[in-house]
Image (cartoon, rainbow, N blue to C red; front, side, top):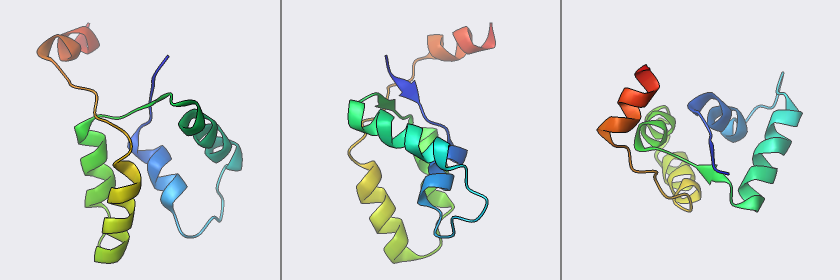
Length: 83
């Protein structure tokens, strides 16, 4: 089973300050990564990366996320979601 990880979870994981972070969420994300269960879509990748203003951090996060291939979205995916 693949799990689509949304932007807030990625943002939480990449956050420098770990104040008020739910570490169980991070642990679960790490487990999903190690099991190969992560899925991502282009819009989520874009949201995560567009929120990074520091160029070096942008490149670092972009490289880290590059190991996850994008799930190709089709019109039928959006129609199914609308139902």
